Length: 364
Image (tube, rainbow, N blue to C red):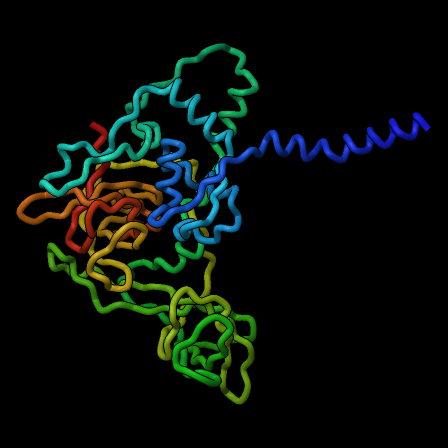
């Protein structure tokens, strides 16, 4: 009988051990979202480093789009991130302010905040860390492994929907008419499509919209067309010369006449959370959906691209240029073409619009 009890106790401990270990390694702090919160703001406030937002997003898989969280939702923040932040704070030099007061002119400009530690921006002058010992400890190895872990720079759906600037309007066909119902379509709707080349069931296409020809707001030079992707359509069948397709994914309303382009894989660039800010100057030439004024997490397009030295992940300050040059936000490049790029507004002091300029982050 005694032996039976020992076996039962051992079994209970064995079954509970994974839960105990998990609890020790995955202890969380719960944060209740309030109106106006973003993952960027939450990690800035809680961890003193807004660039840690991908790590918080990773442990909250219910957040489908990291740019959309709502009041009263509970965000879980692993306690080990607080410990890591404390270690970094004790070991690192004093953080630098990315928004110096001298960069913001005008009486209405709010007092700037420290957006991230200086270590978040890579630069050629960064000093080499001192070597504490020839034999790294397990904690140091674990920290180094965590540092090189990569996360998506941006949500895949947001990246696809954000679009790009093209010299010409692409297309291999268009949405013709609905199989039934309205002329505006969404997820799961069946439509007739016209395709310029032979197609078969299973072929996929991006459904796009194109803007009017865009001129550079400063030079007047033709820049191209803003191409935004509304969704994805997949061919169901071709019968009696008619092709029907299903809208399998919809990012915004799809309309009759929207153009089709051949499907290709779009994957977000990966990042360790350390971003460049190269010494490149340029202008914002267009905004998403042709809305004149943009704010935080909106999409804008700039007049510099990969062949000008820009990479996905690069961060810049933006300025409104009127009677005075006034800093009005931060942007981060998420997609890069030859001489243009798509960027997301990561901080907005005041509305950002075409004609605003961008420059490297001021770390002084």
